[in-house]
Length: 133
Image (tube, rainbow, N blue to C red; front, side, top):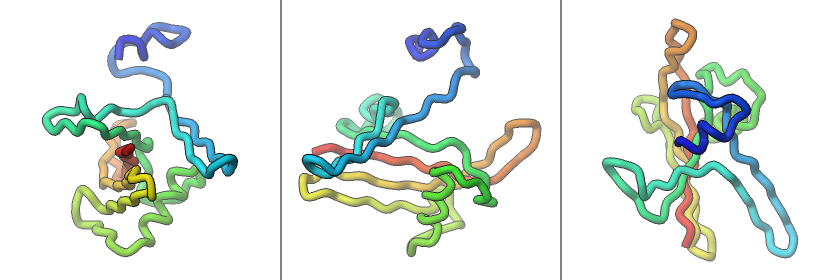
């Protein structure tokens, strides 16, 4: 965390900081591949439930009206139309896929409440978790 705070033009303190987003790159040659980086959470350091070998990153807060046109909102609209959506719990959706090389990628959607700007807003956060073989 210290290095993330120092990696800015102006040093920052707790509770403030620049937005940090992963870049997504798809390549079809020589083998179709998807690269996502550079910001991943190493779940081996997650407490109280460590998960060695697992990595994750998540979306910013997404308003429940789903009117925005950004890629996260588009992904969420697609996931919300899939079977298995449970609007009654905190974990509202989860789907995992495993490649032929045994790499696993999971999409999870959580119901969230945002309290910024002195008002309460309901919405979602998407979390993508990967377990490379």
